[in-house]
Image (cartoon, rainbow over all chains, first blue to last red; front, side):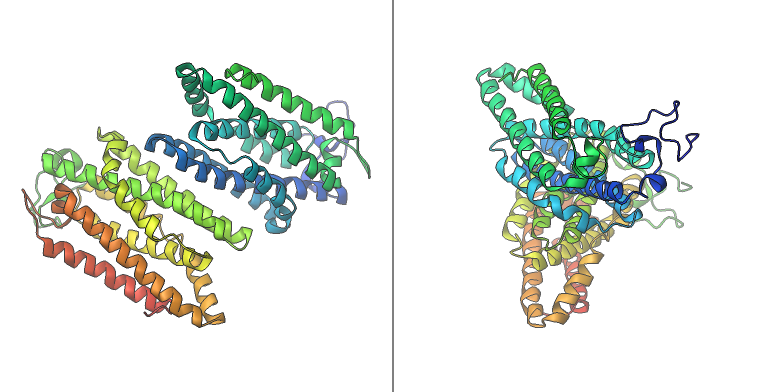
Length: 248
Length: 248
């Protein structure tokens, strides 16, 4: 680390809007609002990973073969290890993981309840969509973080992509029966809609987190910037679905 | 490895009844019946681990807190990694994992269907009982294996014991409400009964595996010796349950 801790505006540092991106955790967390935002963020990511573990393990039951089951189980297990890393980081910074996760339980649980796949292909599309949206979000948010938190987020991000097998399978199913594509396209749209709706609920509820996400400072944040972030993620999703043959 | 590959009866080698315990895989697997037995054994262990992953992940839903959920999810994830090791070994020896697992799917699935926990404490007792019986079986069987297969089985065995947290929780629940002990004692007995019943079904169906388990050779095996192995495992189970305050 050659970046001085207290020089957020120095020209050589690629500082984010608040300058936090050039600071390490010790410096950045001196601001109680930033600290609260990161505890929220890590709590949200941790529970997201734990819930993903649970749902992927559940959806593995829909697998038509033991090999397919093992593939989804592998993704589930990877999500669990992400959860462990994030939870351990919460402990490291002196936060109680359960307390940090609690505010986000309802949103994730509703999302998963509303989007329980009814068959294996829906399960695969969900695994792929979920993994991709999560990666996009991790990437979006990484730039706004202090160097230590960013390192953790990028390490987890590096370990995503376990859903690639799903792409092959879905493509093959559409090739074999093109009618399937229409149904799955609607399904993918519903997944994204539900994800956005739950995210917006979280944004509305969690001021510190939302402010940090848009690089805002003090109280109040630019709702339009959150909207733009969601737009970018939605756009990337739409492109991915089109590439998969799921243009709805 | 200082043990000569082809000296099953040399005095310094603690050879099992068939002498296979002093041989490596290359030597031992020249006997087609031994090879078939090991493919069966690894298939049975692999599917057992995959099914355990699935059930523990499912039972994690019963957890009263996020910390408890994470503990059971951790066990599930550990079982998945055991599955991966055993499946990879099947591939290494040129066996098709799915084919090797297939004959054991019905027995494990029935076991889990018959023993779906109705609450968190039943889930904990099942996690602990399942983990312990599996460890006992791995230990029993290890002595009868060629050196390479034994190494794998012992490596997996080394990574068991993740259910220890369950012991604390169950003990605390019984202390708080002694009446709970009676119900869980019956439950533990039912778990063991169902496990024995499914194992006996497997033993009856899979000749090569059963022969190997009792250290027999050629065709036919000593059913009484299988019975003794099951007795030892049952006895260890009974002692563990008593130690846990679950004397039924």
